[in-house]
Image (tube, rainbow, N blue to C red):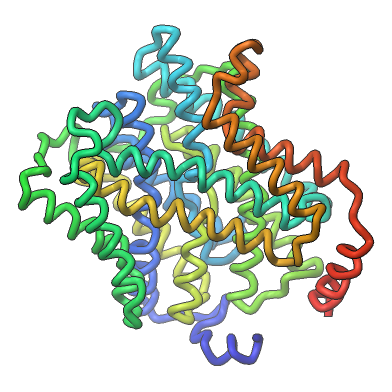
Amino acid sequence: MSESNEKELLYGLEARIAPATAFFTAVQHLLASVVGIITPPLIVGSVLGLNAYLPYLISMSLLASGIGTFIQARRIMGIGAGMICLQGTSFAFLGVILSGGFLVKSRGGSPEDIMAMIFGVNFVAAFIPLLISRFIGQLRRVFTPLVTGNVIVLIGISLIKVSITDWGGGNGAADFGAPANLGLGALTLLVIVILNRIPVRALRLSAIVVGIAVGCLAAALTGHLTFKPLQGSWFELPRLFRFGFHFDWTVFVPIALVSFISILEAVGDLTANCMLSQQPIEGEAFRKRLKGGILADGVSCMIAAMLSSFPNTTFAQNNGVIQMTGVASRRVGLYIGVLLVVLGLFPAIGGLLQQIPAPVLGGATLVMFGSVVAAGIRIMTQAPLGRREMLIIAISLGIGLGIEAVPEVLKQFPQVVGNIFGHAVTSGGIVAILLNFLMPMEKTTATVIEPVKSIKAN
């Protein structure tokens, strides 16, 4: 594999790269990730009724992603992985953030109260990766690929419901499920699939962006795209904790659990990045890089909360861009960070992105959310699955998805229990971790997995 990588990698991690080449490569990374960055604030804003602030929320998401990406690439004082680790708004937090927002709304809270609570809780939760980074070596021995993959599958499956809702027309749409809505989503999805299968690098990198553009064009031609007046100014400097700072333990606990679980996903992404960048994936140098990457994730989340943005995480799709372009130079990460900051300083850009019809957005996000499920399955199946592993998967998926599908099963418990364990990620993830601890390894499984470990060690 290393010999093949040496031929495919045009610029190594520390290689100096021409500005034009670095800029062009950075643009490709943006094309692969910008939709993923702006989608969470679009979903949260539309579902919780924060439409008046959506341009600002999208703008701050881009700004926070840019600052976090720059820190990861620059590796300041040991903070950062020193690689192209694009920091984007995490999908994993959507469920618990929406639940917390609805809780504040049910208490009579205003949109400003909802955001003050969400960003205040997210700021405190950002300390979790900061602390965990100190013990990342020990945690990698505790959380196996089985547990990590299981959690990622639960995250993806729980988010697919959001995609299908948008595909049908969005929450509360009068024409929900109309053939026209389903057709727009299907067209968007079809374009993305076709472009992804064409062996042309530029088309594959921009498949999602082109798919959304085609979907919007079709919506405009059929009268399903109505341009709304742009809200907010064209240029606006960020304000720290613009909506205030609130904190509630009931909202915090589910978000804290997802913060802890998302670290497992980040570890996998950082490891894959090291492999593609031809860096060691074991030893002291790797542990330091891993520690710096998780530490930067925490710092990035703190900055995001202060800027009124949602938690950030290391995006996995950009590893594919490294592999396809053969450019691993971390200087490209600096360019990406600067470009995202520039985009974030113009809230009107968020207003334009807000015009995307919900069915088009649903068709595009289905690909991303489905990819999360596929990535989780791939991680789970790294080693052969014996009876023990299949039992853990069956129970954790069954409990997690079952509770999320029928949340009324917890209505006899205090409300805090439902808020914490009413999500597939938290309930199923905790069950997977506990079962992995409590269920002894089978002798046959141990003999099969051991050679895999020895191969990795060699």
